[in-house]
Length: 147
Image (cartoon, rainbow, N blue to C red; front, top):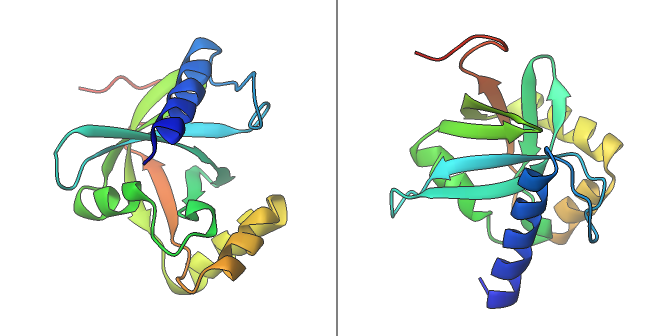
């Protein structure tokens, strides 16, 4: 990742955390995002990505589009190795279990995402790989305390 990309990512993360989950500046201003923290597959270190999402029942659905690049996003390998993740949404932080969806469920969830954000259809057309669709399900219920 380039220094410019790292700086841009750091700016988005800081903006998200400083404004209770709202992006207030730049091209993502007003975007509905969550922060996904995974455990690095190789390093074991926490890695955080900001992702657009939509709801499917009580699950948060994210797509590994990597903006249509031919490589999967870094966080996907982390999820494959360790599906226990942390999600930041607004001012709330919670533990979740990530499941890579398959078959008809994957197709339905991707179609839902494309209907909400047509750019995801463009991303799928830009690459030969199948965009992975990941369901994030809370380990605890809202209002519960872990432990």
